[in-house]
Length: 442
Image (cartoon, helix red, strand yellow):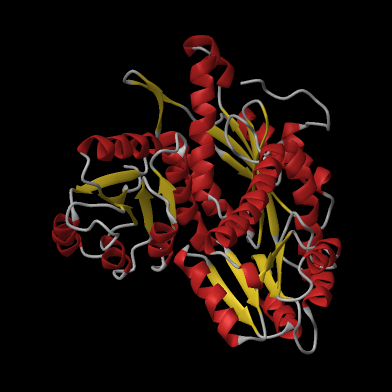
């Protein structure tokens, strides 16, 4: 069963337009639409559903609310709100932004429905994003923070540069810092320089804000490491939101590119390159802090027969099936990778040998007892063999070689089993496998 769909309230007097919105959101397969035809109907729906709506999309001009009266009605229930309007006069814009709406969308814009979907996904991701607001003016700091909370960001605050650095030390996962320029103790430019000495542009974005210097101050901020700049005298909500969203989107796009470079395209697990880079770092950290580590090699039994008998698409299904089990059963701190073909590897820190024996035996049983869905009602049973080596301070390649030798021993012993050196010290000698020797292909 998939995750439940997020409810979106659509208040729109045009059934045709409401159906267009529902069709567009339906493509994302994450949202379900509840339609209300006017303000009175919207009140009934809200009373019935309470505050269980993820977001609301409101027509500015309704038969019983022609001037946006429905907006404060919905915003007042703490529902993130996007407004649809066919008219964007100054009066309409002022009326829209007088309430804490997320954004507005022009009905006449051919890209409006795409932008609407983009904003809903932005609202879904924003609660995972931390933003630090730094300003010695409590009024302006609270103003910026309240705007960010409308978009569901996690907001942290600091009154000056030194306090901001303390907050960053406690929350190194902050993705965006919005800082004033003139502050006591450490000003915005000094803070920006200090942040850039600790965080790269790919890790954290900075937006400078100032009431002084305008373009000159903007240039100074950007030269010192800021990503963007906002002038207080000409502050507009929609411009502010656009700049914030652009900074966060840029960071996320960089993260996607990085993830693509280190992920196996078929299974979504880490690839061989990442395994050796991150694995070496994990063992180095384990050595410094005297932490136990284990390395497990896993191989799908008779994988060549799966491809020969059922086709390579079935083989791909089997690989994805095992990868899903590994994702679900292993910890987030473990490095789980596909090294190539049907061979997977798990490097786990803070795992004792006794726990490893139980964990990997349960993993083997899970693979044995679940079936691979090949589609069209077809299912396939597979098994896997594992070799588990306990780290004794050696390098990653040597640890991997021992785990691989144990895997070979598990296959030699009949497959569909776990071989651990503590439980069966004779396996390595029995396997007689030297580094670089060919393994069992099935």
